[in-house]
Length: 454
Image: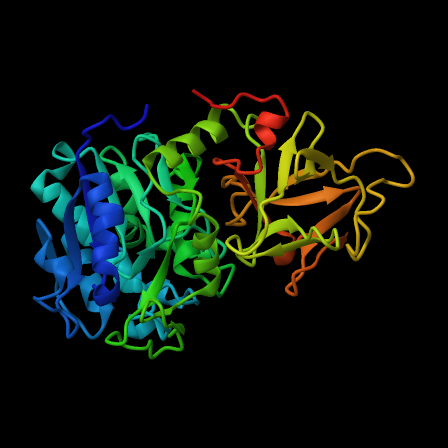
């Protein structure tokens, strides 16, 4: 059952309140106002604590964790409060970056602080009885910049745990979470499990030496049988760093400067994901239409194919080459239509629609638009990419796919070419398949489909 209109929502900012000079107004417009939500912050009382920060000033709840030069000291206090007799510090022998900030672990990053702050969120939510006040919780970061409004919560069914579709790094993206009051405690209280059962965790983790926070969250979800509840929504935001924010001292990402934002974009691939949806999801109605199409009418609308370069497929009308380019700079003349046997690329030109029937290896031309052997349209198998964690291959599926014909994958080369010559399905062979909600090609009506879903 989905969230109802008027559901009470609390957005919780986790960690340092960075990049507010760039993100506050963007966040207020695209998240707080869109969701009609209250705001909470959970931060550490350290040198970055700033009483004038707009996220802190506008927060209804302010949860401040004690500062510590060694996050292990905070874990010790929580451990004593739990009354556990097991030595949690055995976990410091499990290598990677997930316990960065704990001196004994000798790991980079400050990932251990995130686990501690998640515990503080749970502690305060329980102490204040907030699961009886709010129906939904959004746990996120202050340094996100949104290119689209946050999806309305009536699209995100409340019996699931919702995360953005990407940035998993072998596990589960920890940067944004939408969860119901019924699931918030269990979904983020992983530190409780780790401190109470460190030997079990050590046995489950000692087989590898490069654990990150994403993989640790996935392991916890597997232990708690939460993996089947994880669902995805499109990645419509990306992380930025302002001039005032410190550059990570542990070799992290300072980012590349963007003159239009007056900020540094931390991860190009994350921004590319958000750019795919910029012109597609402009309001609540767009979100609702997209979810309706994907959940109930998956073949009703033609689809567009987005590459891992943040670009979209199109046909060069002069050369008849299949290429990819920025969505605002290329013609909207390719759609992908799914049938019973697979998907076909359709070239929509002027007043007629043309099947793309033949792709040469280097995609130099579509002429004569025929498969010279079979004289039949090329039909692509849609191979779903299952991201994530090796311990559970049924993690989830999303709209990240490979497009395969007779054992060969379609590939978007960095120079703009699109070729059908790959025996493997790696990064350049991954595509996002998204409904063409606005269908400016007119293909839907020309093909005799309904002009509207409703």
